[in-house]
Image (tube, rainbow, N blue to C red; front, side, top):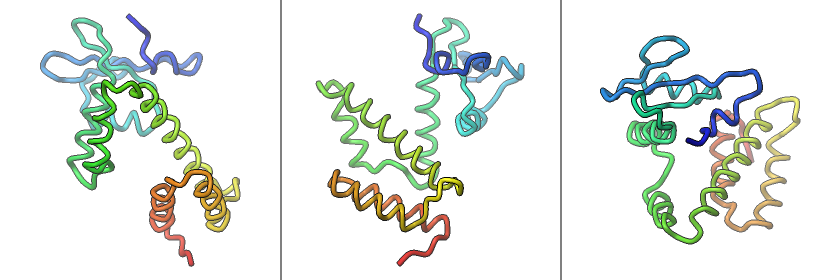
Length: 165
């Protein structure tokens, strides 16, 4: 059995929280010795706490399926993150020769986006709306498909209450 990514990525000295999934679909947190909900697992994700979900009988790693379940609940609960067109395009990559590349591409670009978002909200980094606009202008020249990224950036500024010209 391979080590799950959460176990491999845990900081040295920091243990990975183990959550057991029982046949009755209940989740048991071995750290707190209590049953937890999917919402509480989502809270672990939001806090960046490493965890792994294991089948209580077989020990199989179920982490991905639990994360997908959280995404499904989020997608059906409110304003979806993924459009139908985007989901259809992702599905088309399954079984395609580029499947591995697509997963890696999405992961790296999402991490890049999260890093930029974090640096934007960090006052010590000095990101201003003007600097961000200059950066996005350079990116649009390098990558013509950045228009969607620029639109997301505009929405972030609006959400932060920053007035722009």
